[in-house]
Image (tube, rainbow, N blue to C red; front, side, top):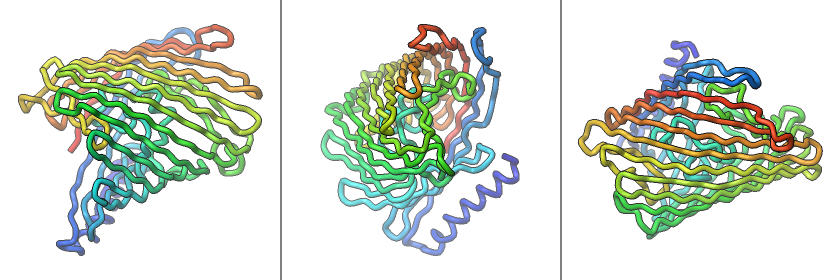
Length: 382
């Protein structure tokens, strides 16, 4: 978006929150935070399909204001990198002993990979499981809490968000887990997620069609989208989702793995998606990956010497989709990713990932696309 529009939008956001907080005096507090992610990608295309084009872009320019207002927690957050500003977290919350109730727009509770902040994930792209199954930011009412070695969360939500109102419907989901070991450098995490959604009239009137089309070669790879699922005949679609997750930290080594799926049914046809990944990392400088047992997720890495850290990452992704009987399709994809992360300082990171992805038509046993991409990111957060 034009720079002057971004500045105007940022100032409007700050004024919206700062004015009532300032008037509230001792009954309020305010804290500003943000992130900048600048991404680049260089592709090695094969001869199949439309070739991907090299690209670079300011992928994230988030600004947030959060704090307390008359006993309530609040957060207002927007992303000003797209052509139009996009709302992220916009909510109020209240704590009740071990539980917190949240009302507004917030990221729904599904999957370990999706619950980790984009500032702290080990690869530039999230897993295909998180990209295709996690509901993301939605308007809703949620509750999360923890006790002992367990954590839990759940919500009811609209399929609409503040900026995406053409997806009509509603959903409900839960995520819970158990971390019997959660000391620094010694973590075992187990968890599961369930969600049920009802999407109304996809493809009819002003309602958007229901499509599942992951980018198999990353953010810039629109030509490599894999069309796993499509419902656009106006019939209501019921979606049942599940996910299982496990992770561990053993000194400088860490790992995480998830498997999940979804069943889509409109009464005339059904579709199934199954996805999973396995990921491991090694911090060459000796740090242990940081884990928050109350939320069941990994958080910000703190270099031991206070200056920098170096991390090697490897991940294998797989996804498969099948739809019957009106649209007869069965497609799959797999990818290997090798990455290096340099934590130049506590709030600055440089990432480089090499990904080799392949997609296939299972019914005809043919390769649809084989793309390699070298991706990079410079990241700042405050």
